[in-house]
Length: 411
Image (cartoon, rainbow, N blue to C red; front, side):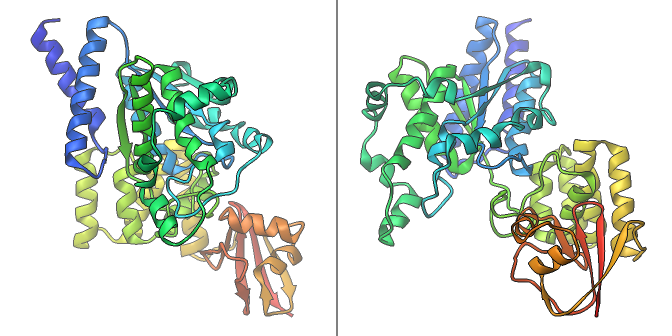
């Protein structure tokens, strides 16, 4: 390969890999682009792939569409021949990251994080190539750090560097406490980069401080600082909060096709437009054309959502499953056809949704009913219900999960 061909190949990689990243600062984005260029050139000279990773804390069992943004970028690195690692934060999850929060969060036990982490590897493979992906747990190396080691990590930072972060400053202004252990999250996540000798780390935009802290620790350990690539946070199905299992506004990567399709159909038009840009594998031109057609009225929002829903289900379950999910949605919600497995139940109304789920046999207990609601598994008359305050005061169709239907009639 000539020098000119090598240069062109690096430029093509650079354009693809930087696409979609956000830093909130043009100067920082320019600096990270140049750092990535240098890493690509160095790796080419050394005839080795880049070492690229991202990490997910197992605070809940499911990876969702929000995680797919960085997973898809990892897949691009992978397809270009680079070395890809997914870090499951079995240790960092026990601390709890507050980067995206204006308050503290309860600590999870090691047992809770271990249980949540069990399926992360398999879920990653819905996007990544199983044969070319390394999945590791940071508890394997972080648990071996001594107090002396941790003090050494802490000596590279000042308290002032932490307190300039927006979420900490807001809490101080409100007179709310900041627990000392929260600072250790950044130190331990940063050490992941050192342990992996990372060239590139991916994360959501609120992870930028932690990633740059990792780059600083790498320099302290005599390693070149990694490239930070951060990407937008995906809003959830409610169109307000970030997508999160704990908020019940998520679409899991391994959820059933009918569930995925139905949840996409429930989002607002504005949310649909944002999602198209972040969670599909459509080309830039296709995304621009789709958005133009919706905004001009050429493509009705209902049809647009069907296109998006079909595409997403196809990505994770295949085209046939997407066709079946669309047909099921249209039959149940648009044509009003009676599902084959519909159960007719007579109850006394009005009735709270939690009690209703128990009485009709959809849940074995009130706590189980609340878990169904929190997980976004319940719809009443085609509308997803997440709150246990919902009151049913008239005959209704309740859908639980992808295939259970209950017709409530008043006694």
